[in-house]
Length: 482
Image (cartoon, rainbow, N blue to C red; front, top):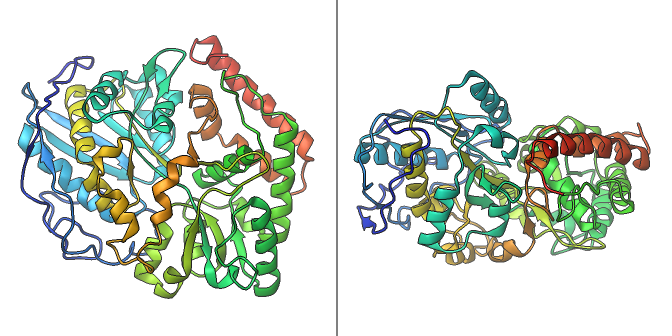
């Protein structure tokens, strides 16, 4: 068994093995798993995530023999993917790799909302999984995890420069530590119903936040169909509200990690959201979970949401009429910027209590080498932080292999890196930003004003007080700059 802090054995000359088994079912990309499924459908899926995968076209997987012998068990914990076909592929992929290298791999999938609590419990107990993935920054756990700089450096050596938003979401410039390894991410576009927005005067959907207010209000007034932008304690609310802030020139911190939340720009953004809520939404957005906006769109009850492509994929399998009516727009333009947070960020950590860190790090390099298969298995949901690992992505987005109508519906995502940034922008996703994110300070700040409980000025001031306390705590520990 590897020592927790031992360096992984990196091999630099891969060799090809046989193609993936092709799918025969709605959710499967692999024909049969070599072990029982550990995962289950995510709560965000309102049903089967789209049509069956095509019989051909899945990327060839490669395998690199480790330079030292691996052994023992490797316990992996990650979310139940919003596109369930990914988990079918991933579980088979892990078992297949383990059988080749002599490691018994066990995979556990749980709902993404439970992962940070689970990590904290395992760290407190000093035992648990060797390798854990979350879909947002895990910077608040920096003191309790291994430095992943060796894995990131090796990946960069093999495959080129890592996408900046992934680097900023997995490393601490103050300490120089990579508290996570971030091989992938997911864009966060707007999803709109063309049949509703066209009569409202926006045949190609909204392009600005002002368009969203004008068109959304008209649709709710004339059609009785609301929009779905959450202000609750869940991940999607965290993402979209930061995008709105950035569009108005506001942010939690500046590039030097100084708290700048209490600003006229933040107050304006909060006031705008209160108006948007009043004219286009209902009170249910205050109690949403990560499934709610997806389910509302798939059911035909939402005119616009901000989300990945998972709701649309679900609709392909459960409500084709809605699926064909769903189109996408990039981040909306605001007075100062056109930016969105990454919808999902793949952050992998190895806790200090891990008993097989060597195998964990070797697996991550194998996973990254085969990220094209992950992209395909997720039905183009997962994007790689290393562009050359998915050479067919542009072609897939231009001609959707999973039955999109029209086939080029996702072509706009080829430019998604231009309008996507990390949590913590314009600074890094430091430990303080991680805690602020996971305690939902920003959604609560917006919700208080939308409900009429506080003025925008008072709510922003209260939120900044909370944020400063968090930053001060981590700064005294030497983990935040500024």
